[in-house]
Image (cartoon, rainbow, N blue to C red; front, side):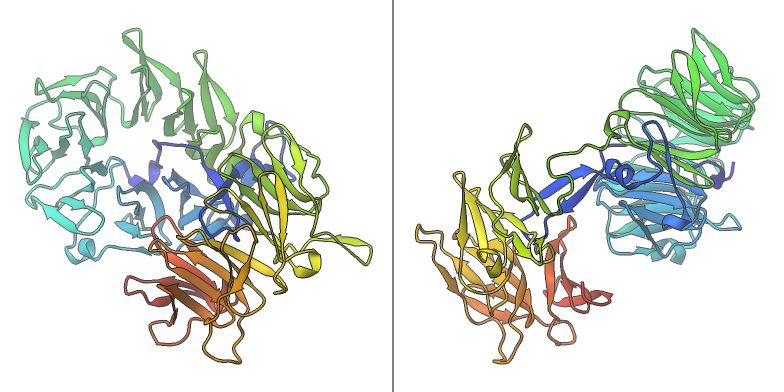
Length: 594
């Protein structure tokens, strides 16, 4: 069995939200909404029970989808016939160009993909959070990779990869090759933590002791003497099932014995066990299920690409004739096109990969478009506070929602300009919560005040005549910083008089552009500041100008963000910069103003 004929099938799925960060709130506060609910609101193809099709016209790199995988950070990776695409509401194409038929995530968070070129040459690529690349270790050692679906196992903080030149281990940083005399095809892990494989060169089923393979069962002159194993599965009871080109066999690692499971002379392509220990086997003759002590054939004249049971217990089948779900003992057709791969998110959203694009279907109870009292209003900012209230910045005013009712706390930034209401949505949509639970809103002086705060049920204006304000941050001492149109930040000490003081020192040139946009408190308590004079850092009462690795000032910008991988990034006037381990800013993406 060649690898590209078996798209990835068993994926642990969970809720995938689209996270909209309120950019003025540089302390991480996330407001999450269902991504696919939003997609269907926006899509003219949306219907209560319908599917939406996404293709190369929507940014997909190729319409033939072979694998779908959801990472723990919520990113959806889509392997196609011409590479891999990351999907977070938009398709983001990578540098890979071959067929991607397996995707998995390492304990380190890195993503591993396996590809096959037109000559069926197998290779592996690794995504380190920034870019894809083929590990030099594999190519330098001329390691030949297996094309069996069960080519890798995660165990003890490592990914273990079965190859013809030994067992490869990778802990996220270091690659290592074990027992080079033993080449293997498949790899599984039993409940006791041991790795198992079969060596055709040595005619053994063997276990791995952490350094080398230990022969356990001699396959010579046994039921496995002539069959070739296509796929393997460890059952919930610890038995190792081997799907071969001559039937289905079971190896008992305790009794050290092989049993023919009497499926017959069929070519087994895929094995799947459901939570009730029911066994499903896809073969060249169709789909078989073991029930009531015998094998029953349920799907014929179709190629089975994927079998998956969701967290809700629903069983799905992706075939050359369509997508099916199992209901009351029957397979019910869901899509009548060839489906190569399938994934259901825990919110009920379905993803199906076909040869003509990606299809999405939202859960039935989340497909309606709900209208609120804000219908028709421009919503410029959303923020979910620690007390569970949703804050909305809109042309209707500053509004909170506690899950039961909407409360308008006033509309101080509304102006009658030429007969139209105006919200400064470009520089007036930021919402921030400090450690005391006070909610802050930036604003313009010509809209009533420079900033507003909300606490104890009261909306309070703050005036310090700096034109517009933009971002907020809070120091370890509880002081509030706000960026603005005038030079340097303004600092609020939080006393009852509400006194704001301008902190000088940002920018060395007296003629420098001191407008400031972004402010961010780092883990060590220092404050990063970004504006017309570039990126500066304030620490222990001192300002330090940031320069890149070429000793040039980092260009000004309007945003900082620390991503889940711990990297601090800045949106600047010349693209995206990131702070490296030497505390130098380096260009990550060269472009225009972000």
